[in-house]
Image (cartoon, rainbow, N blue to C red; front, side, top):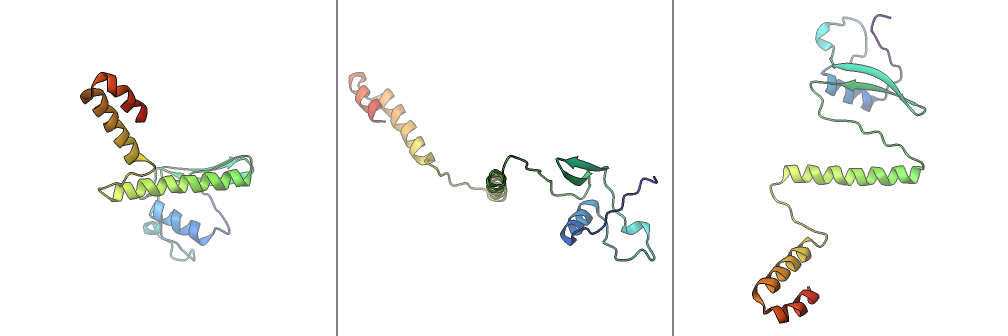
Length: 136
């Protein structure tokens, strides 16, 4: 009614994440409540996705995180998607923190193949290059 939302039995980790994102201080009592302990966000909404209800805080000035909701047919699929997403996020995190990247997954072999192909097409006798191209 008064543009106020009240949530009960909120997990402590969720309280900490929300307070960091909104800039609010966690209060254990309503005594001596002042404006300087309140946080802000651009939009707050309660959203239902499937059978679950979520509280969405968007446009938070202090937020350094985001939430990704994974849904799918089976729990095994969701678990595998979560692992893959975690791996991708950690790769991006590592790449942004370091100035160097060591390629893997056959990247060196692919580059070597490209150089050998270029070498055989540009420097070897055309009649002999067929054998080299087939090798590469």
